[in-house]
Image 1 (cartoon, rainbow, N blue to C red):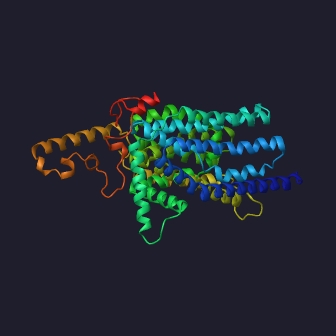
Image 2 (cartoon, helix red, strand yellow):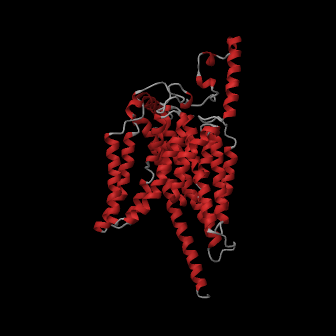
Image 3 (cartoon, rainbow, N blue to C red):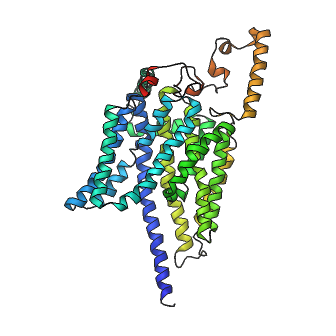
Length: 456
């Protein structure tokens, strides 16, 4: 037993070192690369359309797979795979996918569909490793490369463009105005990378609502429970069925609170787990936390203009990437401090999860201040109160039409909806010219359109 003690200590120290180095890799990839490239990708998709950047993301996915294939066939060092991944992992199709959905669906249906999109990514992570383990390495590499190539071919030949010419023209006009403003500001043209980052910061800090959503997203993105994404099947059930049901009866803001509370409960259970079943219970409870990202994305999408959906989703996903880089690093320091030999702190590997639970409670406090009607869904009570209030306003307007302000008399829907003065974006969820509801009957549905026929 005396001989085993040093070996156990060495294993704990080695584990802490591995966690630390992998966290540093994630930090550089997400905090320095994704925070620049992801918003830039979203902005470019507003200017040039979604389809070209689907193809860019799919082409970038082929490069690491090609390196694996060359490693298996010609002995190319596998180190190049990790080097390439640091830069290409930021070129993700997630931002473009969410923007595509925002272009095609009414605000009411976006949150549930965002959840389904994210569930597909989770299930891919859940299914991919066991399927790959059953195949020979060369067969698995060829199969993965062929799958990505097939997706790229489908995108090139069959996938329609979702961005309308009007939205594209509006984004390009706004881009020219911004470039013109920088050119006359005395500093010359701004570097695209710097401009992308600053644009993302302006979007994320645009209004009190956006600030609260950004803080909540970064807290949820920084927690350590991402390592349990292998249990993506549970997330599929939550994001496919549970999310849609809860949205209909609770609304986005309250669903977000449920997701954050479930994440806090997960962190506590994992921190105090003394048996495997407790850890599995925590992981199952934490699957409800997967509703937070699609819900936040939907609220921001509904409060952004049609011509900037890509920029908004890119900025939001960039903030999440920044948190995903810095969060694990903080967790790694805590894990190392509470587990390494010679540390003055008591041995407690659950310390990072306690810290994660506290962060989740902070996120709950921030999310509780978000208006209940911030998204496209309203709880039944809020909807009844809102309809009653609107009816009273209509009666007052009928008796004293001159008392209404000019914007309301001329049908300015943004003013009638209480959109904050001075905002630079018209919320697509409140505009009659907004997106198309492919299911019919939802808000923003103005009848059949060319995009509806294309996607049908």
